[in-house]
Length: 99
Length: 491
Image 1 (cartoon, chains in turn purple, green):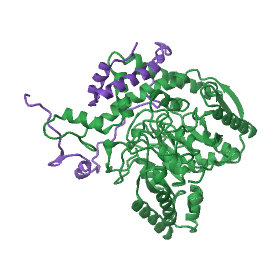
Image 2 (cartoon, one colour):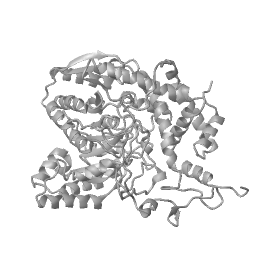
Image 3 (cartoon, chains in turn yellow, cyan):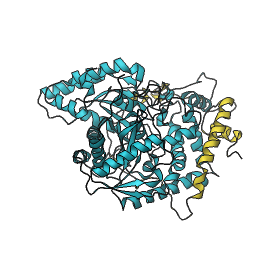
Image 4 (cartoon, chains in turn red, purple):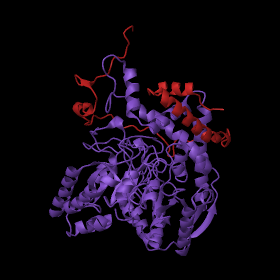
């Protein structure tokens, strides 16, 4: 039985903001299925009492003193942007016509 | 080929410090070598000739003024293109960042500049460091200098190939699942993954934040140690950076080079000592173990029963983190934007941009990660993978109570021909079978050339406890003293 269907892959592509083609969907569905079946065996190894490890070093929140220090200039920040206007990043419209 | 390009970093630094060669002469020799061979090797995505010559001239001027310079002053270096370099193109080998020039330097680049190294340019890699062959670069693959029809490993294939092609004596890589060590093994060079948190990730284009580790590559263990020392140490800008002094890897490499391993206990990872590896790889590895025993080391077989689950755990954890990290490539703040003709919404432009900008392996991993993190599958996949990470860490802890370091082959097979594994992603993932456990645990590991199989290099991997990077350098240098370095054929 396939672990992942073509429809699920299409849904994942939408969630991932990837406009994949019909041809790509077929390809990815097959490949993701093989990968998921290969990794599924990890479900058998760890018992409920095993704590998860997210990170190999202990994580603590790091704060600095609230002191103003030099940062990148506005020009430097915007230099790599595909589009900018009035000192800000310009984006395509967010709302559709009817909204 | 100029003799200067055949020298080690330590030898070049000595020549420059003694006034026998200028940093500009050394840089020019390497830039000329790149001009002569890189069309065939394609190790570089960008060569910064002007910047390199200016940096070299600065070293010469400082030397002329009698300033005290560091141990690598004037030595050329190649930097993997996933690391931010101020004003110098940084693409992570992706179309989505084509032409991007970062407005800042990564911490390790700042340290390399402060050390007086001369950056030659940016090296090719698998897109966003996802791959084991450098076939997933959006700008075309890098060719292995040992056989131009074969892969140079990945994702740091460009960095490793630049060393094997004598285009640079030093290079920087990043290792998320083996991307420094595996290219080192298949190109006959040395590559080290430092302890996670021992080198700063600030300025690295993130792939999998809990695993990514920048580290050194060179043709000798001593050079690798010198570069390791130049970039290691705490960085307040990286909250996962370990606030402890870095281990003295240079002294450890010198100690190892004496060839005495009396009293050192090596753990042979039972699960990685034969099955699944090519016969030639196993043979070269076994001969090297015998050489280490002759140097006085004691070899103990150690079982790490959960290592076999490392590969599946990695291929759930790394894509999950990648799906989150790569969300920033949305066509707003930097890089590519596609479809912005006034008729489409932000969401449509974002989807079109990401589809056009990302290659197949990146898309595959983003979708895999999105799946593993999604409601309903989280516990079965991502949650389980994090538990496996605990079990692998326990295997390492138990092993290091019995031995000083663990050893295994670095890769199960030598460099394979282009295209032979791209059709089946899971077959490609097997290239990282032996390197991944260390990334999940966070400890350091190094790959050292240990012989040839069918005329192609084989690497031996040495794994050490967290923040005991010096231990692996001692064993690595001892092995090098016994088996020597490998010389690739003339290009």
